[in-house]
Structure formats: structure tokens, C-alpha cells
Amino acid sequence: MLKTLTAYADWCVQERGLRLDRKQVFTLAVIDEFVAQPHPGLAQATVGNYRSHLVRTTKLLNPSAAPSERPHVPPSAGSKPYGNTELKKLWTWAHGLPTLALRQDAEFLLAGCLGAGLTGREVCDVRRSDIIIDGSGVLVRVSQPRVRLVPVHSELSHVLIAARARTSADDFVFLPGRDKSAKNTVSNFIARNTPTGEPVSTQRARATWVVRQLNSGVRIDVLMKAMGLGDFSAIARYLQYVDRVDTCLYRSLLHGATPPFSERAAA
Image (cartoon, rainbow, N blue to C red; front, side, top):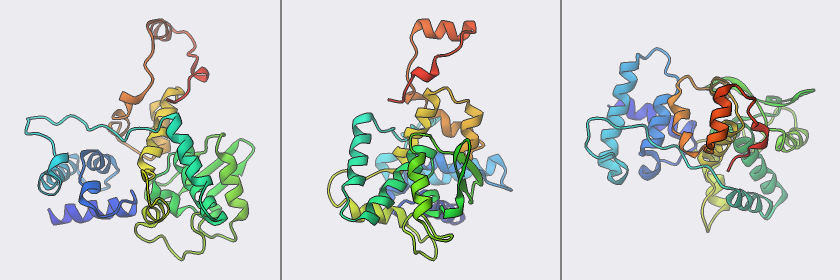
């Protein structure tokens, strides 16, 4: 079990950017997201055992988040996406920070999560050369652990273009001047700059991106590629937040009509 807990704690800190707080780390949503990640060299049964160990640990360290005793535990709910009013508050927070450098870092953090679905740690690791601009738009390269190129939504691509322009050489874009990405870099930035009120959640920001893509009609396999995932269950938990369709649209889609996805927006 120690090996499982060590691997899980390392992922929570290094990839999810969480603080080692048992109420943050030991929840079913975070555990299920960890289980859904690629685990090279491990059999599916072994990964299932990892989940069982982590759920048992949750019962000890964070009982209120543990599942009730039952023969089958359904997939946990994903992080709730932000609504439009909440999104406005996020940008107000970013634009209202006291220094230009803080405002630029906050804006880049939000744009990375909301515009490309990056995790907090992935935003932290982006360097100048990872932002690629071509005739089709802006891409951001994720170098580890799920290597991929993610197209940035056009509404927020200008934030990454500006960030690339002001970043020197091949420095980190978020909090430039660092030699490396330390543990809790993003969570510490958020904690320092949201002393009161509800803290910014990179998990909810990423969920907002996921749901927006689903509402826009992006294919599941395409979304999984952009997220660097190999397991559909990591996306399935967000389906409860996707816009419902009325009977007319339901029928027309299955009859073969062209879906009016361009007219739909994320909640």
C-alpha cells in the first residue's frame, strides 16, 4: 500500500498541483482521475487494486468523502464547471491583482486551463517554446507526463500570444525566472493571491473547458487526445454537466440532420 500512496501523492502534487491536505487529496473524484491516467507496465487489475487501496485510505483519513458500504461504487462526479457569472469573477480577480506581473501570471493560468484544458501543473511547466503559433491558430505543447499538442481556443489564444512575446529565451511562461517547477507552485500562487473569498480552482477551470468542448460537439476521441487520456471514464463523469437536448434536436440528430453545434455555448 505504501507504494500506491507514494505514487498517488506524487501525482497529486506534481501533476494536479494539490497541497498535501487530506481533504483535497483523498476524494473519489481525484482518486478516479488518478486511476484514469496512463499507467505504463501495469495491468488493469493492478490499477484496480490501487483504487481499492486509496478508497480504504480515504475512509481513514477523510471519512466524509468515503463511499458508503455497497457492492459497487459508481464513477464519482467530476469537478463542477464554472458558470458564466463565476467566470466573470475569475477574470475580475486576475485583472485586479496589484502588479502587472501578477496579473499576467493569473491571466496565463486561467487561459491555460480554460482555453486548453491544462492542469495546474501543466500550466506551470509551459515554456516559451511550448507555445506554437501558425496560420491555423495557437498550440501549446505539453511535455510531460502526457505528451501532446493542444489547440488553444481562439477566444483565449491572444493571452498565450502575448505571454510568448514577453517571455525571454526559453523561460517558464508562468512565474518566469524559475529554475524548475517546484511542488505546489500553482497552488501556492493561488493561496498567496486569494487571501479571502473562494480560491481559484484549476480543476473546475479544466472541467469548464471539457464541458464546453462536449457542448460544442467535439468528438470524444478528439477530446481524449487533447486531454492525454486513454480511459473514457475520465470524461464520462462530466456528462452530467453537458447541456440537455430537447426532443426535436434529439430526433433530428439521430435522423441524420447536421447538428447546430455552433449555436450552443457552455453553461
